[in-house]
Length: 388
Image 1: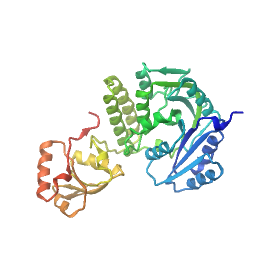
Image 2: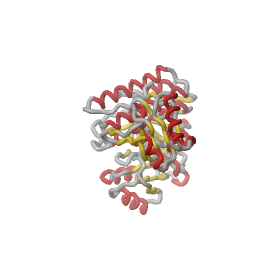
Image 3: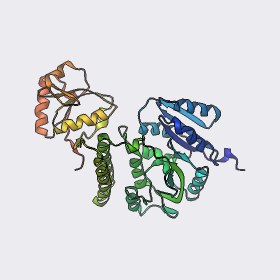
Image 4: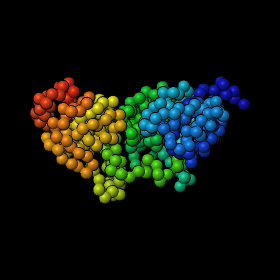
């Protein structure tokens, strides 16, 4: 029998939000792994059902379990907190409504050690199929990778026989490697952080292994976030496409690979639009939403740019929009635009000008200064076209 104390620690991060129906099966599948020396990190993202108490109960009976309770903020920050709390040589992920085979981490650890891999990729099963999905048909080892482009093409493929699943849970990573690349995800990203992280990882990995086996059981839930069909999801597609495009451009990838990403999100958008009767399609976004973090925002401008900024800022939960202004008061069905003179009676940190042309922005800036607004609080930059 292997002495568990001589084994390297593997940290397993489970983000949790209102999954009491599935959580025990998930935790049991991790606790019962044949590889014993696990650090099991349960991050409760402000659950309002019994999920938090289930976590506490398991922590009382298994010393390998660490529970973190936090205010609800979504999966990106929840995973980040788990990653930053991990101490293992390797890190894996399991979603709280899924479960894993008993041998997965023993087998994947052995492969990681044999190849000294920074990441090991494996497949999964869904609850409506018995065939392995999302991985290679034979073991693949890339060292000092020359075929990085083929990995990215697989990552962005929509075909069911794609050899790379974009989910983090379909991999085990060296801790330093995933800490570095997860750190590149913006705090504001509420959708698609898996795909962003996987993109960074495949661009920079030097030692990658893919195995043709499936160990993960992905549960398809009708009420899951991934099944949500809404105008908000359409905006998230555009935002995620834009971010991935900027990553590829920055890393020197050609238009060919950018078009692969565009095709993926165009197809997703068409599928979604076919299910929506009325929808809002943004064209512009503010280029540096992180600059607004923790700020009280006054938005000036209610044209196309202003409407797009309004939706973007409302979606970004780390700042507060306190007033929307234009030359005169008028109404949308979802918001009221106030007369610009109301700016004098508000407490704020930033006045964000939402117009496309620089000369128009300068006229507005002068008007705001004449109204007594501190010029240091006024921001304008040319809006980014989401599909430019």
